[in-house]
Amino acid sequence: MGVRAPKVSGLTGPAKAFYAAAAASRDRVLVVVPTDAEIERMTADVRFFLTALEGLSDADVARVVLPFPSHEIDPYRGLAPHMDIASARARALHALNAGTARIVVASAAGLLPRVSAPQRVQSTSLTLLPGQEISPIDLGDLLASAGYTREDPVDQSGEFCVRGCVVDFYPAGAQAPVRLEFIGDTIESIRSYDPASQRSIETLDQASIVPLQDLLDEGEGTDRSATVFDYLWSQGKPHVLMSEPEEISAQGEKLTTQIEASYEDALAKGDKVPAPSALVLSWTEIVPCLEGSTALETLSIDDESGVTHIATQPAQEFSGRIQDWVADIRRARERGDMVLFVANSHGRAERTVELLADYDIFAVPVDRAEDSRTASVLVAQGHLTRGFRLPEANVQIWSETDVFEEERKAHEQRRRSAARTFLSDFRDLKVGDLVVHVDNGIGMFVGLKR
Image 1 (cartoon, rainbow, N blue to C red):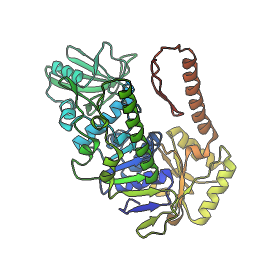
Image 2: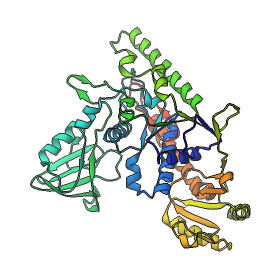
Image 3: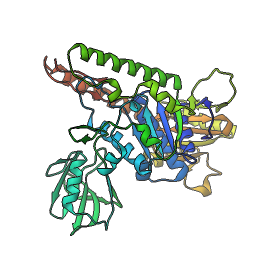
Image 4: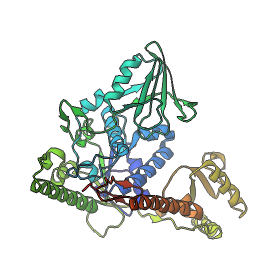
């Protein structure tokens, strides 16, 4: 896992994430997936395996493994990207510029748009530490330059306020806003807080100000003078992993054709719009940047030399059939497999240990090294989308969604609920209304005012 090769075949989706996490021990890594829908799953799985391999905290792994989605809009349709998407791209660019990003997960479409120059992003970014010298007023000016909106109180992403010796701001994508308290021009403390009660949640060792978008104003226009590769290549070319290269290329070529067609439509309407080359890279321009990459494929029928085959098998889904799972655990142990179960929470991990004990299966937390040799099942805590088996390594991994019916049903219920909410809102629209895109895991909808 993780060794450089022209092509690696036989990997399931989560096994590809394992490969990427292993590769990060040697190099910085760019993982390219075909579509935005695959970014979230790949990012979550990479974070799980990097945490498992290196013992990182949740906060640390979130800083070094970053998604880089596309804008999810046609640049000639007059819509702005959602703030969460634009800020996720800006966070990745900032981390690459600062040298803290180790793994970036990008879609084919995410690589196309031009972005603001590294020095422009750096000028509106700052890492804040206790004891640091900066005046609250200057900090407020920096937040405004980074795209934050002045509001009091601060209870939504992208807002900030300055009240005497206190500065509050809500980073996009964060679970809670951040409060900095000053003594004069010195930061005394940094804490996250509950916006409803205003009570502190936890003390933080640092906080980062990052632009809320990857396109920043420069003079009277928008700075589009750079590409993501200017950031990726700034410290030497990373190890590029392409998950299903043929699908990635098909997506890239399709998007390039769509953008060119939209440009022609805009010209036909008499709109004065910039040429595609001013807004995006074509897929033809991106291909040379991906040369020398490692192709990660689930299936491969090629007999060519240089292909590394790592056999992986998707974990069987039991949908709450615990007796069947127990029988499979026993078969795995008879084969000599090490069995790992990944629970999403500490409570689920404890309940699973107790549940397996009722079937005379000895399960222990993975960190109890003294019992690991005699245990039938090691129980870890984390978020893994699906399990898999590595036959040659005698390793069997199950995720919570593979085993328990209620977790799968809860996931499906969330998807259906999101769809019902969208459709309910959609029915209330009238001709002439503006419809913005909604991405809820089921699909993306984009509409324009007509």
